[in-house]
Length: 353
Image 1: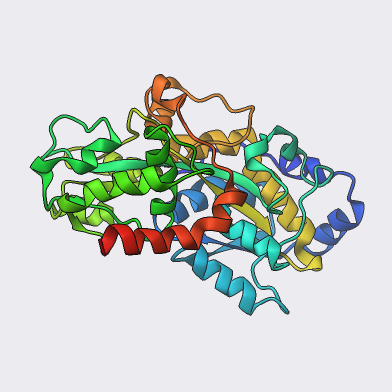
Image 2: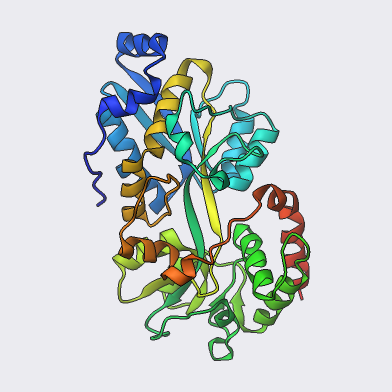
């Protein structure tokens, strides 16, 4: 069970809203307010509830936060569209590509430092004009493997093309995993993904003869634990959480060539009457205390510059220091424009062959 540390006071949560007396008066008068947060299901939800929501509720007596789980960001976007005229979600957690689309469709509101002071501590890759939201965490694409089969950890993305693992490799690349793997493979071939992704597609095609499944159902982690596959691609945060609970079976590793930081964002979608409370929640989630605790428990990289991780936690999230230095920060505005076309090319040229 995940237990949230008692690190946040009501004063810290409200600190960024001290200049908003009307909102504070309304909160004091009501005493009971509800806030709705929607985001990823599974281990992320459990960690977010324990670390972020529970501490916020302790710091804000009378406030109740409900978490609405979604299968993925596409489902979240569909809900925001459906509720456009009467928003039910106040804070939406979505991957960066969906946050960009949500801004384009007018589904999110601008975040300002005057209301959320911690925005000043977020680097440029976590705040940019293409989206209204702000980065909350970052998760690296990694290799997920069965340590009962691979007694030595895989060290390279090239391990996805190992002949000795024929029909034991899962490569679910018809979604964001494929979209971020392409730039990695393209860089490995010495090219810039913004200029030419052909080398990345060519390398992915080299992996194809050894792949047992392109559609890891129910997911890469379950198949690994069941010894159905020995190696595949997945998200490091969930992989590390499961590795902690299953130390003799499943492992996750960031390959030596480096990986891509997939950004999970917080987006303001609340109607006017709940905007101030939603801003307070976002400020809380971005605070160094919460960011540090979430990284330690959930193995997602923090975004606040004030956070300093232990060497052990940092290596679990980003890999060894030399690997961490090779982490890629994608131009997500560019990637968003090419997302669907890249997926179609993977389907047509790699999977269908």
